[in-house]
Each structure stands twice: as structure tokens, then as C-alpha cells.
Length: 311
Image (cartoon, rainbow, N blue to C red; front, top):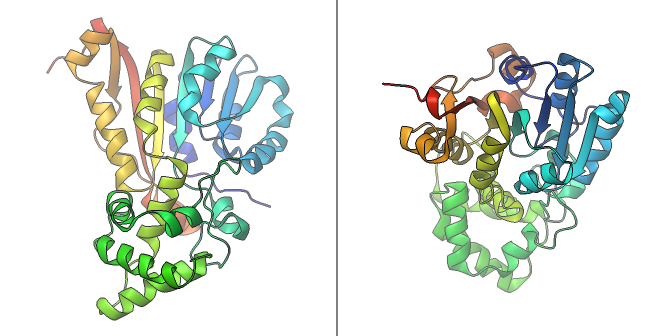
């Protein structure tokens, strides 16, 4: 079984690995796709710390990376705990930090996880199954105004107000229990109000918004990236793959902020982007793995005050 097909592996390795004897952190280790390639690319002195909040993912990664024994440490946690995790391990500096944001193929394809609008199952969408908040609760209990704001902010859904109103009306009749019920409700709305072909499934934006809310994906990202910058050694690198504009905008803005001379002067360190534009997958990779089509990879290198780039 393939747990998840990692995206832009070659580009990640080429830009992340600055020393083959370093410690690297994969903050979204998932099934170990990128992690295994990192381990293949470094010397026996090198080490990897893998973090993920999905127990199923960690079990798969543990089996996949078992050959590396104590050179790999896997931890169940949200990446917002990055700094605390490193402190608990006695690690003060690392050579590189990597993030592959968003949802994995395994999570989408596992019907019982309730992520996909293509498969009918109980609404869930939790990456960490020990958490209480799930998509079903949000859909059936959030007030109309809060739902509308959620769909607009995290889904960039242009019909956010109308869809929120429709959901509240329908749940008064009976609870909306499954992904299929919610998807059908949204598709029906689009069919009545929006003529022509759809470029993406009508439920895509609402499902994205629910997933982000359930897992707090965007709320913790800025602080986590700042923690990573602090941990990285001089000339060490941080790479982030994002899959939609909201994630990419946060990453781009954080990189820009830490590249400003006043920020570097204030903290004594900052970032230098390796390129102004993100790296995107090759056409062949998109053909083989359609999920890669929306991926954007950004890399930055840590610099210190004396290295502030002059304009």
C-alpha cells in the first residue's frame, strides 16, 4: 500500500540538505515519504525528527523508517509544539526544517476519516483523532454568521452567506451527518444558482474551510514558522509546500517579514529567500500525481545580522 505520494521530492532534497551530517526536522512526516528521501541523502551521522498529529500516519512512517533505527525519532504532536519538542530532546539547533502542509492522500482516501466529498461517511476531518472538535459538530452547531465567516475566510467561497443559511435551514429539519449529505446540499445549491460547468467540485471550498477549522491549520502556522526560524543554524534552510492560496500567502508573508532589514536587526537573524517565486512541480509529476498540480514550494535560508542583504 502507498500511504501518500510525496510531492517535489527532488526539489525538496536539493534545497533542504546543506550538510549531510545535520539534524533535520520533518514537521509533517505523514507516511514518511519525504523523510525517507532525506535519510537516504544524509550520512550515518545525520538524524531526523519527524512530527505528525495523525497516529495512523506515524505508524506507517515508523515501519517505513525502521531501518534507520535510533537515527529517526518520531513524535505525535501538532507542529505548533516544535520548540517544546526540541527542548525535550535536548536539541537547540537543527540544519533544516520542512513542512508539507494540507491533507494527505491517505486521509482523503480513507472513507472513515470523513474528509472527502467523493465518498459518503460520517463528517469528521480530524487529523488528530483524539481531538473533540470535528466537522459534524461545526456544521450542526456553529451559528449561521460564524459558518458564513468560516466559509468566506478559509474557503474563499463567494456564496458563503447563502450556503451558511441553507445549512442552518436544513439542519433544523434533521442533522447533517455525512460528507455525502453535505456535498449533495452544496451541489444542489450550485445547480440552482450557477449555470455552466464547474472548474472544481462545488463542495471543494466548504470542505477546505471545515478541514482548516477542525485542525486549526492556519492559526498555528505563523508561530510555528517563527519557531523553526529560531531553531535553524546559520545557512540552514526551511522549506514549505502549500496547496492553496491561504497557506501560500502566510508562508510568503512570513518569509518577507523575516527578510526585512529591521526584523533582522531586531532579532539578530532572519531569512533570505532562495527565490522570489515558488518552485512548482514539473509537468510529468503532475501527470503522474494530479494532487501535485496546486503545490508551491518556498525555501529560505537563515542569515545573521552582519549578512543583511543590501538593496
